[in-house]
Length: 308
Image (tube, rainbow, N blue to C red; front, side, top):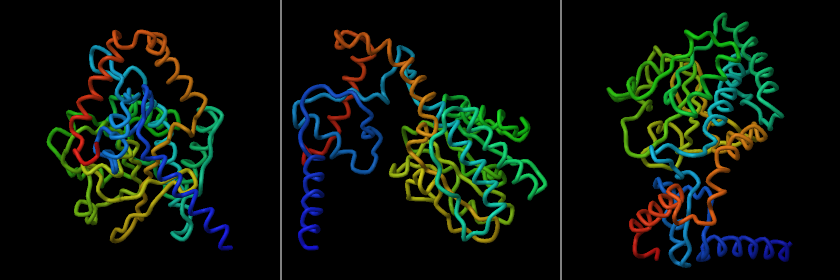
């Protein structure tokens, strides 16, 4: 037993050490360290400490500032699917039975079949269709969420599509609390007023039972949905939120939602990224990659000196 424990501790130590090793060469990846996520400075500092460069896939943009490739559409699509299934599950199962684990689907159609079945069960139990509010509805992520809802049979009038115009007045928004499902699809870059918080949830008008935070800024101090602190997974898709009265409230905060539709998400991303990849040989003279390098240098300049 002592031998096994020692081996486990050694493995953990090795893993910990590897995560702090300085990095050289040019790295093209999703690093998740540009938006003040938890531990961002330790992740980012590895590159300048080793003389390397990070070209973050999340921040490859065209001349208009639009991302050249993103998994957003399928993240929103998958998130909306799980949100609708969770809504129905809560109506048809006791509190002691949380929404079960999920696994990947071969394609969108197979997923929609299951979502339609769930909605039918929820409608049978509640006598009504779910009401869904999507914030960020005009972006890739939001359009995926809206498309899923409509393809799964949610009436158009029950899908509220909000974007910058609707949120300009600043939250928290009672419309969120008065909906059954809230799907957050924004691209968070700075502090904004909360969309929903514990105070806004404390009302007898609350119908909200499911929040799907597709943006999944769980560790971001600017997260406008400060009612949860846990990143959920496919094995445990939801986390309960302590609220007064009924209905119960669950949050979905899975940060790898496109994996629910791996083939279609990968094909879409690859198709969009390929033109830029074909220009890598001369990357410093290609605007997409040059902008990524400039942003990397700007972010490195914000690192605490203690990390360098």
